[in-house]
Length: 69
Ligand code: FES
Image (cartoon, rainbow, N blue to C red):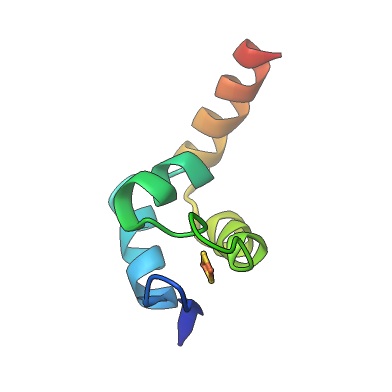
């Protein structure tokens, strides 16, 4: 299913990027160019991130946010 219509990116492409290490919207933007045009897909991309990240990716994201705060 297409998630980002502007860039023609599917949920499977996003899941593949997450499986290959993407753990933030910044990573997904860099890897797939999602949410860089109209931005309507950002919420769905974030949902896919949260649903598909591994425990290690969640821990890395949490520690990065802790350091940034
Ligand atoms: Fe993704 Fe427009 S739908 S940037």
